[in-house]
Amino acid sequence: MLLTEYRPFQVDRKLVEASIKKNKPLTVTGVLQRANAKNQNERVYPKDILAREMRSYMEGPVAEKRALGELDHPESSVVNLNNVSHNILKMWWEGDDLKGAVQILETPSGKILKSLFDAGITLGISSRGLGSVKELYKESAVEVQEDFELICFDFVSNPSTHGAFLRPMTESVNKTKQNNYLKVNKIITSILCDDGKCRILP
Image 1 (cartoon, rainbow, N blue to C red):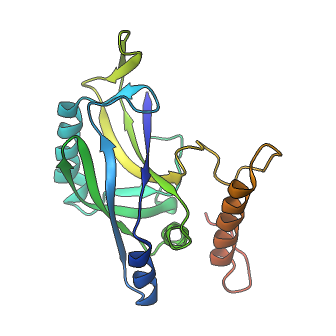
Image 2: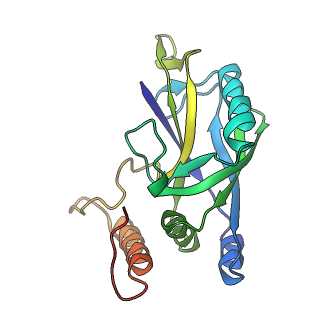
């Protein structure tokens, strides 16, 4: 089973602005995942399992500079290189919080991601992995089991609005959310059409 988790990811706007102004690579830090706590998907990740996967990820993809993630979540267990936007540089624990340093890449999706950060758009970080879960009836939750395998971390739209990135607007959406979506569309269009000719990403 494909398991995905969402967390809000806060970024220092001044850091983003300085990176863009100096035309330098942008690296951001934040909480990637939380152990031993029921999340909004009613799922609990035991710390020993998450720590095992963190070590494996650090020794493999991170050490080999291929800890890549995508912009928005695909329904796949494979990282699509056409949509790669960032690379995880390192990870560490602060209590039950798994934190990480993430380098935003100069790919088409990475440029979109950097522009979204610069515009102050709230994004989330989302882990993607494979595994099974066990029902915890007393806690009204499910627990991730020993067969869990971490695949990557993706940047996604605001975790409070799952799957709502670039969704057509309805009358029930408030004006603030409308303005956020218009901002996102404007940013993406300006990047894809920066030479006066719009192009479709593969």
